[in-house]
Length: 388
Ligand code: TGC
Ligand code: FAD
View 1: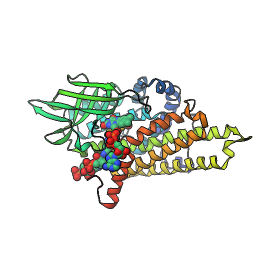
View 2 (view 1 turned 120 degrees about the vertical axis):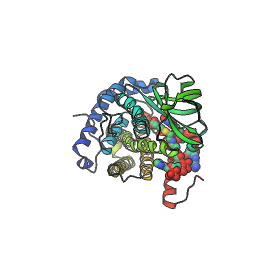
View 3 (view 1 turned 90 degrees about the vertical axis):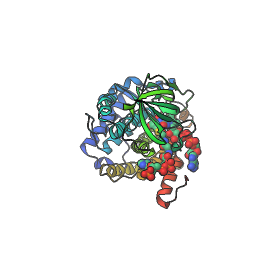
View 4 (view 1 turned 90 degrees about the horizontal axis):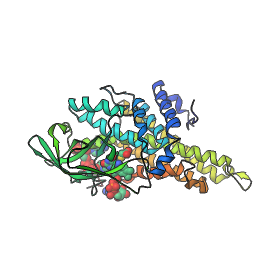
């Protein structure tokens, strides 16, 4: 039995199957034992706790919802619950798992050749190899279709030129999935560490996701063998299909960060005495705590139903956008309220709140900003694109 009992006002536990509960409990126990005791140190140092990678792989958290090639193949609710628990530890850990599973293993599984799948998938699942996903460029973030990265075929190689920016795991990755235009069409390429012309540099000065590696990747006349093209990639849509997988995990992860903040605020409010009474007795504080619980409960139900839709093949990418957009916004709101309830203690890392709050600022922006998801949904319900 772990210390954290979860936040479950509506008895959602009863809607989970055995496999789902087990996956959640395993991830929760791992986070309690191995992440929470050390995360502040890594957050302060601004380094990623890389020693956790083999354990995360061994527990089956990397590409957990993917099947074949020895992958765990758990259902999407179990996978989501793993992401929730990892992000209750820290967004950097969920980010690592999202990138590895949803943005590297998934495209290899869906768009890769048999040889690529057989070589990479088991190694990425165990954590023996690390991957990253390069879509964003310095000049093209929300609008990846306009990317400048370009590949040109020369004999049995492609020559790749371009720069990718803000790439999670970039400097620690053994392989990068790089999106670039080939004959005008966006395609995915596997670029291995050490290839001449491929340079990475870690971005410094982050106040958010400090325990995650974020890098710039640059490709200068980088020669890649033809067999490193992901053969089934066909335009931006292929990259967006990967993002759907990661955005789905983020929707669940945000619930984990929100639960951590709510738990810290509730406990603090019951203990902190002002004007001779616990601050939890004041109506304004109770209102904040109730708002936090309400939004967590709504986000949990949203995730659970989305997971069931995904498992039955009925989830549309706009369903995923709604969940990412709502849950991250609400988690950020909850983190800010928790920070407020903690008073001055809200700004120090004696409590997890300020760390989650700073992390969530990135989560709000990456994988499609909040406003981009709003416009994706706006287009879906009106039939009119705001991007054109
Ligand atoms: P648009 O014309 O709308 O779409 C091009 C084609 O793709 C289809 N499509 C999708 N297909 C699957 N899934 C989706 N989510 C899709 N969205 C669109 C679309 O139907 C079309 O198909 P077809 O058959 O007509 O060709 O393209 P656009 O250029 O207008 O795109 C606009 C927009 C906003 C949808 C898109 O570019 C976008 O999502 N922008 C946000 C960029 C983004 O999310 N970047 C994320 C980078 S990776 C990252 O942040 C990792 S953080 C990881 C971590 O640490 O956790
Ligand atoms: P911009 O696109 O320049 O947007 C700036 C602002 O303008 C935003 O508020 C946006 O909502 C708004 N805006 C833009 N267009 C419109 C519009 N049409 N209408 C209204 N408002 C608009 N990318 C990767 O490829 N791989 C990764 O692994 C990765 N990891 C990341 C890790 C971190 C920590 C961070 C912070 C980012 C990461 N990213 C990654 C990049 C991320 O996906 C982009 O930051 C994101 O897509 C937004 O792009 P941008 O930062 O260039 O902002």
